Image (cartoon, rainbow, N blue to C red; front, side, top):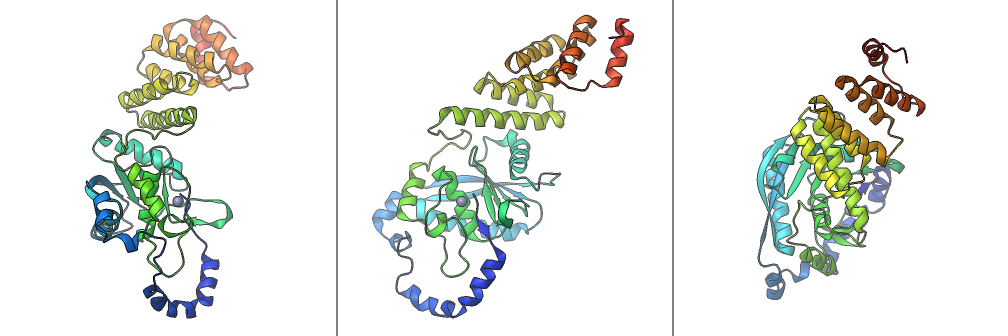
Length: 350
Ligand SMILES: [Zn+2]
């Protein structure tokens, strides 16, 4: 998360340090990789710790910002750098071509879009790598170069074909925290010049090795189990809602079930599932879900409206009127069209 590139500052720094850059090759010979694992790579015990190799199944996502062969070359270069350090090999499994809709200004929306689009393949890949020119407005005019989700730590966004960016985000997926190191690949911002900053510190490497075999379909455990549950439940709710918008009701229900399994007190998830049952004309199931929704959160005005409609379709007009009034008392607008239909059917004015 949060690799930033402040353009003007960097340019200034670049001018100031031009002379220094000329000296760097000499300095590097004198051991400028100190503090990183680079000087340790050829040691037999280091190599032994990296065994056995994990083949990480990668789903590549492109929007045509880069050519496929450029991306392939880049990924295989990164794969070598990762394998040398921790014994993880990036194995390209498949490609997915994405055309964004309105997600590009919001990294969370992008994550949910990718998760939704790749849901049916989720058991077949470990990490989805998206090579996209995302726009992400953050405070202070900073422009992130890469990003990863903090739910499953498996959806990675890369703006530039710089190994530092991919490696940084990829190692986050194994370190499972937002924290950064002072130096090397897990530092918080790309250095403007100098070394290849592709190397872990020995300590970060230990952290990566600890989680080397993690299951990417499971949200990693945290100290705050409640927080994890609410994040996970929210995530499934969001992806489920995305399926509802696509009118893929079966998938949407599966995801909402999953969301409710994790958090049975999630009013909005019941409400959304009720809407799906309603569109399938399963009104009793819909009403049961809307009941749950307003029981958990009595201020869900939309749930009253939806329940009122379900009662209407069942011909239970008095109950329908009750719900209309509850929603109106909460300040929610009921569509004039529906009110009109209800008046005609019920022979009541209000
Ligand atoms: Zn980061």
